[in-house]
Length: 193
Image (cartoon, rainbow, N blue to C red; front, side):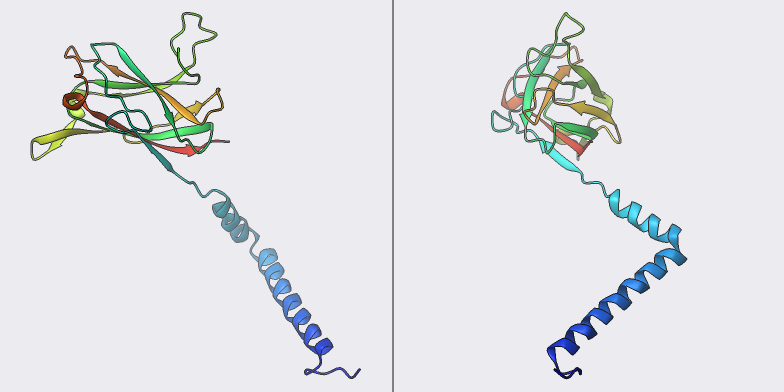
């Protein structure tokens, strides 16, 4: 069979040569500028994906924090929908009808979270919001709270992809039940390996 550009064998040889030359160019670039190539590869590997888990204001999925809560008491919720059982909570936001001092406590196990046996208690971190940081828009409607940058390492030891979070009211004024005391929590997180 005669070889040339118009034969199938000639076409395959030309295609192979083209790919081989491109590969050689890439290898030359990586040998000439190894630091630049490695930095580009590291940047590609370190792309961070941020997820958000948001509660509902009422008893919808995931369960919200809609019950009444006196000072220093806690309303717990198993918030379903995490992308991974190991995460890093990077930012927490609250929208609340009432302007109170709030805390979120995070636990590695499902209820009962608070355990007198320190070996069994699954506490792993908290986020605190002072009433002074709650802001309204035009002096009306709900209060907005933002933790800013935070870093809470969390692992759901039950393996259910839930965030076991407890809302604690630190104010002398009680949190009101249902509509007058609605509160939404929003948790921004990254999977952790």
